[in-house]
Image (cartoon, rainbow, N blue to C red):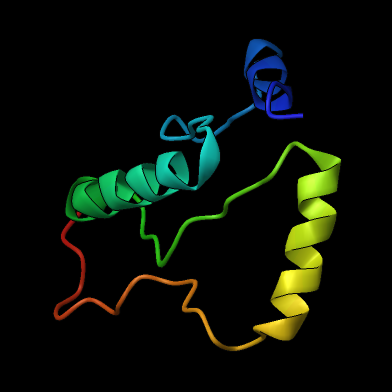
Length: 86
């Protein structure tokens, strides 16, 4: 599923150059912290990261967990103290 972005890029469609395929929760957290550290230098504004899960069984498990923990985990970065400089 994650390979679809490479295929879209090969067709000449715009895709985010900062996308990454990570493995496991540690890989996802590393990616989020890496993206957060780049935030002030990006040419576009971000307020978080979207994590997509390729494995369907894991997707279903996460949906069940999300329903139980709804509203418990922040999914966005903290707001900026000042506007971004482009």
